[in-house]
Image (tube, rainbow, N blue to C red; front, side):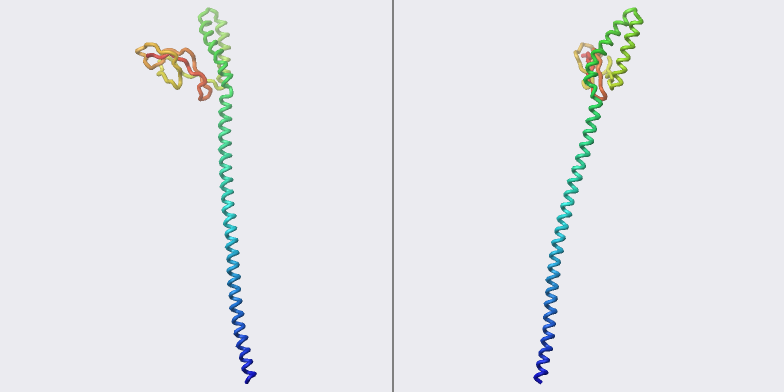
Length: 191
């Protein structure tokens, strides 16, 4: 019987040991599972960090790209403006010559020499057409128009009750290059 009791005790111990081993194994698995979860959580936080870094870099890239596009657009616009007004200094220097031609034509037309008048007029037209091809336009201001300080420069005022606030005479023609006035017409206005 003694032997039976020992066997029974051993059997019980084995069963108890097996139960303890299973509990230990389960605890280890839980610990491993917890450990793995921590690792997974660490990996997620690394993934989240990388995702945030990627989002920041994308934002930087988009902003830099937008800045570059704005720079290209601005420099392109400036280049176009520069091309439009590149001849401004040369054209401004030629305007007194054009004015002299206008005055010369008036005086030559008073004389009887038609050939001289025709020759000077041909040269005058050639000069004007060359300047117009370079973008020069005459500002359209004439006597009787309402005075606008944005498009004309008043040299003096004379008493003229019927022409009050209007242009009485144009002393010097005005010119523009594209949309920009490079020389304002000089006018006399009524008071």
